[in-house]
Amino acid sequence: MTDVEAEAPESVGRGVTVVRGILIALGVALIGFGGYTLVMLQPRPNQLIGVAVWLIGAIVLHDAILSPLLVGIGLLMRRAGHRVPWTVIALVQGAVVIGCLFTLMFLPEITVQQRGPKNATVVPLDYAQNLVIMWAVLAVIVAVGSIVLVRRTRSGGRSHSNVRPPRA
Image (cartoon, rainbow, N blue to C red; front, side, top):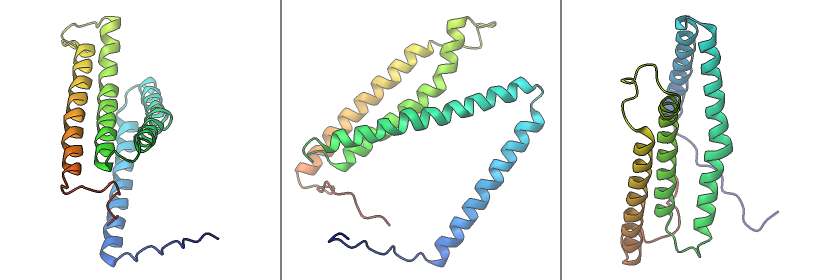
């Protein structure tokens, strides 16, 4: 055994349990409705295969790239001598998530443009350039936000601790 005893989890009130149950039921109902709609409204089986490939790709992308990347960012920033406030780490991780999601949304348009669309009005914008601009804007937002958060921390502002706030 260790010297530090694990704290017992706080008991959850009845209201929280009811809300969790409602949210779980709602989630299951929405997944069921989505599955029903997907199967019933798809005119061709190859479209179902395409959706399945996209869903599997999204899971692999999340589990093999995005999650390890975010954990790595957190670990690297924590190893910076504990000088980086947790709010800055959260800001950087949030920007990476937003950037990855937008990249995932832009990739089909970029691919169609590379192949040459059958109708040029379907993909009228320069999506690759817009993706680069979006990442640059995210980088500027993170840089400015990090500077503000670090200065606020050093000046004794509200988030003066490198310790995460307690969970509610």
